[in-house]
Image (cartoon, rainbow, N blue to C red; front, side, top):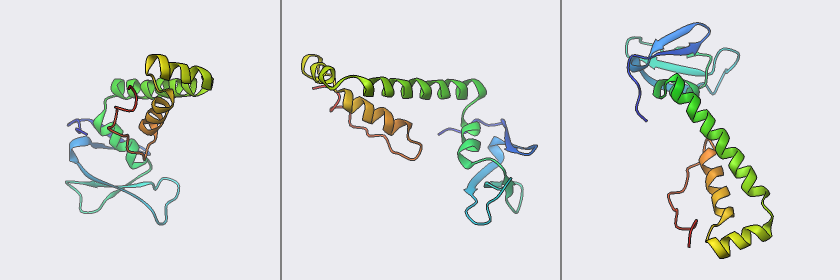
Length: 131
């Protein structure tokens, strides 16, 4: 993931920091409460800043611009809708698609769900989609 330099990143509660000055993000595990979700390490301070946002949210803002982030969210919603629609296709139609068009709807649903899962690692294997 490439960090966009010079971008002001919201850390929550009116705190902002430059994206290229943030050197580390650590989720707060113990004593986590309102306004205490992530420790943000910077190049200029000796101690971390306590942010009220998640490390994933801060990292997304560091890497993607406003328009890029909106397009990414829209893409995720479309993929989710597509997976739901493919999952709702009757099994007999899925078998016909697989047999006649070599299109494995089950494999596509699994791949989309893996991709959308925040903590999942999508598979690089695409050969099981088409025979």
